[in-house]
Length: 392
Image (cartoon, rainbow, N blue to C red):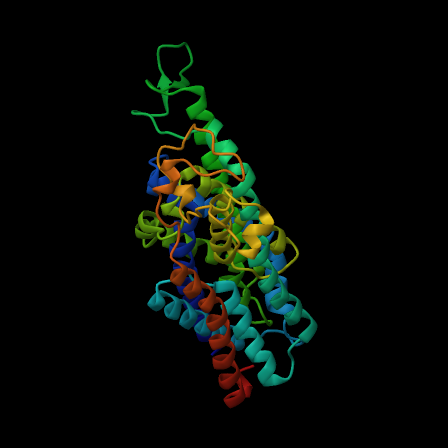
């Protein structure tokens, strides 16, 4: 009986990891793939390696929180399998609504539902987690706002990331020992900028592993009949990798609405900011959604860049006077390599002709799912474990 339950749990874990891979790979590697810097297969391979490193190192802290701190009793294998089922439902619901999956939040909600049903919920721990769910979007927004208002325009004037025709590097076979050399059109600037893009993509993959591997692995490590931590992490990584090589191919093309609508340079700022927030919180064992940090950093960068024609106090009070605020200022074509107008002055025509960076309705939908997803998983888990307390 235990062996059959474990097999079901492994299948459920693989399903969850597979879907995580499809979603997270697109977020981490969509911009570089869209810019032609890296191929999808290479991106999926790098994603798998660095997801494993993130899950194997920092992710263990999140696993400890999920499997041993949210509730005051040990998470049993049977309860873990049920929780994986509710995570799967959360993924399905998010896919139906067409938004990235808030997997970490859904997982916490399911475990909290178990705790509420059995009277074993660790209220101080869950309160701390939820407080970070509230604070994290604010942090992402304001860091993005500072970047968009003060940093991005200056960097955009000095740095241009372009992919030249032909391979980046070739192998010089005429030398005594074959060695890599520049491609026919490669420059030092292109090599350095491309390397930076790849490093940042790997960093985001590491962050995704730290926050998401525990969601597929932690429910299987509870109890004497569960899997060892290392085995669960490896299985979750394999599933995420398979998702990256398969269903993520489409999400890398359409990562859509947000990251692919802004220049690659701006996307890199988003990736570094969101990855750092997620990795730091994961280090402290806080289950957090990488998508949450990513979306709010995008919104913040857009807001910061758009409000350069007015002072900070006027922007906060929404008192723009005669200044024209362009929500899509950061997407303006033809501004690469050009100096932006000084803060407080009118924008050039290239910016005034830009469109919207994001659809406010889409942002509301994302935020709604961050609330609805964990709430649904909590209620479903609570009802399930109230009806079948023996499963816990």
